[in-house]
Length: 329
Image (cartoon, rainbow, N blue to C red):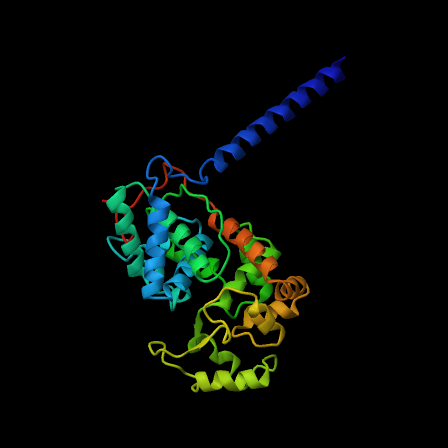
C-alpha cells in the first residue's frame, strides 16, 4: 500500500514537472510569431520590403550586408540589434571588434528604420528590421523566401566583450566553427547551409593572404591560387584599400550552390571553406548541396530560421529603439 502511495506521489510529481516544462516552452515560443505586427503596424513588413528593394536597386551590395548583419547580431548572445549600437554614453560598439571588419551599409538601416517610424512610431524593433531586411535581401539575391517570425526587442547594451568568442574566425578549425553554431542551436547540416552564404559578396585580401604567402596553401587549386595572388599581390594588404576577391566568380551576387561546387574543386577563399570538404561530418552535406540547389535553399531557409530565432529578449529586458544606433534615453 505504501509503495502504491509512493508510486502515485512520484507520478504526480513527474506530471507536474512535465506541465511546468510545457508551459515554459509554450511561453518562450510566444515571444516570436509570424505576422506579429498585423494589428500594431500592418504595413511594417511591406514597408521594409520596399525599402530593401529600393536600396538594392541603388546599391546592390546592401543585400549582402543585411544577411551579414543577421549573422553577426544573432550569433552574439541574442537577436537584439546590439550590432547596430554606436559607441556612445558608456556603450562600446560591437563594430570595434576585428570580427566586424568589412561590415558596411549601416547608414541604410537608419533609412529603413525612418520609413517604418514614419508609419508606426516606436512600434517595430530594430532587431526585427535586421531580421526582415535579411529575409528580403536573400530574395533579392535569388535565394528562397523564408517565413520569418517577428516580435523581437532591442538590447539596451552592447555585447562587445562576447563578439570574439561568439563569431567564428575564417581561420578557425571546422570543429570550433561547428561547436559555435551548435551553441546557438544550429546543427551540422544547417551550419553547412549557412556557410553557403559565402556564395555571394567578397572577401578582403586581409583575410586571404595567409593562404597565399609566404607559400600557397597546398589545398588550394593552383590555377585558382594564381588568380587570388593577382587579386591580392601583397602579403601585407592595406586594410583600408579596396582589395578583395569575389566569393564566386561565376554568380557573385546570386545565392546558389555554386559555392559548394567550387569548394569541391578546392576553389574556396577561406580556410573554413576548404575544411568543409575535408571533414567527414560536413562533406556529405557539401556534396548533396552541390548536386541540388533546391536542397541547399531548403536547408538555408531552415538555418536562417534557427539563427533568427536565437534567444529573443523578453518584453521586460528589451525595448523598441527610436534610433537603431542608440539606446533610448
